[in-house]
Length: 128
Image (cartoon, rainbow, N blue to C red; front, side):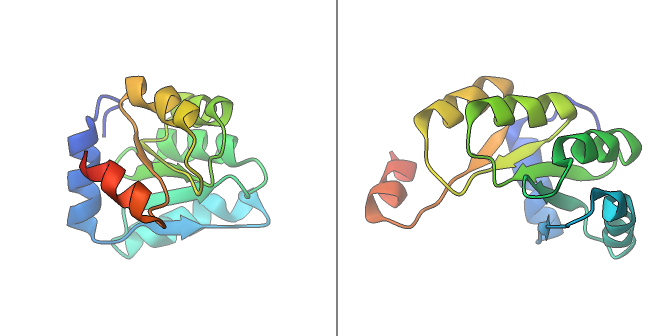
């Protein structure tokens, strides 16, 4: 895949796959093997969480070596990390928190940010 995917392209690919594998590891060295196994099983949307040591580097490696995969970043909680993972090749960003600055950091760069929808305020804001 190219680096010029639109938000709609990313959403369409995630919907077609039907699943996003959330990868949490204690050793990033096995990340490539995990990603290859997921791809072999038909899972092409792979979220690498920021709890993985060396997550940004792993995202960069997977984005470069598995261009057919949709590599994303999870547990992103600040704008600097969002910019880093996007620069590394992440096609989507997932955050467990809502921070307007985080949304602004990813928005202009055409990356989807999934944020929590645990309150009625969040859910209604999504419809606005």
